[in-house]
Length: 220
Image: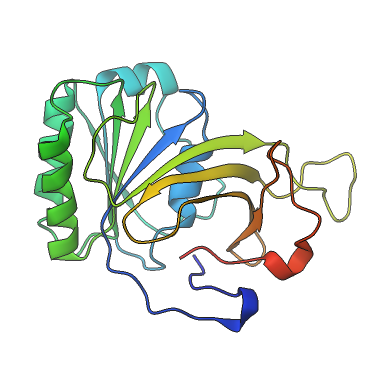
């Protein structure tokens, strides 16, 4: 996926990989998965993807067909959140992975500040991105460096067919970050260019007309 900051001609230095948490607005909303995938490094390395039993039962396995994912996916099905966290931490010892992704349902006792701190430290030591998708969960105390709330929005207009869906769009809320300024955006994933564009959001979650295309940014 394209990375960097296209708006205003600025290209910041890449940040080291670390732990990020994503809270979908609805437990079964696929927007969290789609956004996470758009942020992965552009390599052919495999992804370690770990789900607990309730995530698998309530939200299903990730539907990856047709999205152009370049990475092989190593799926691991486990029952308990504690086992998911252990598998993620163990996977972060492998520097040849493109990312480690975990899905945990609710607020299990095993997922405390200490557990997230261990994941963040492992991720940063190996320089491997770590994403924790939190379905039906509360944003309690966590050591995650970036914490997102995400919701699906109606797709953009199709350029050639007004009756067909266009590029996917999401409402993003970076409500806590130790690396960037928190904020809210509307994201549009441009499939043809493999880019994620961010525009400022208004109070109702729609695009801010004052920004227009000048506010487009590629997420990094």
